[in-house]
Image (cartoon, rainbow, N blue to C red):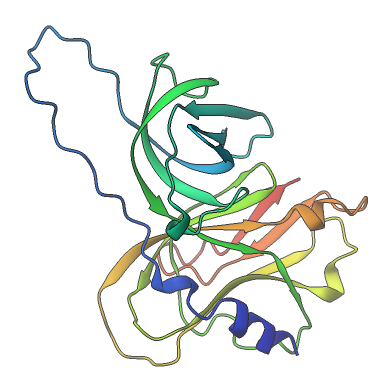
Length: 230
């Protein structure tokens, strides 16, 4: 059953807050020193080899991938970050330019909730909007849809997934729903989360031109449908 599949694969997804520990100011700098701006982006791990890590960066809703490389291993085995996973990264480009391939210095990184677009029947999507999402931004990064949102913090597992209605898959713009269902309605503070959903399997359909995403958006209630072009 689709609902069980969602619960099993996303049981602990939203327990990971997307935060980074930012570095302090550099000591010994004076007003005449040239300072390269620190950039903050959701990037995709391309590869980590001995002594080097490379990432892919996309402009919002862009297809061109910029390759960012650093001469060290950023992740430990215990971090459980694999090629294809997205992370939120603070870095400085050697060139000083944004959206340009080249060498970078990674200053800090934070986890992103990574998942794949799921498929469900209309019946399994009942109650998809049980808990609202304070949507801050939503964009496509290559074959991923990235969501930045404020969600009520909860130590209990919850359902948070992007699910496409299987009856619309063959349409030019299938309908997908950002499902958010907590196990309890206990009030709590909100935390910021980044999530990246891999939609590349849907892009492989010749009939597909994009994706229509429905969100129970408590930030701007009248903005509840977003069209992401392929």
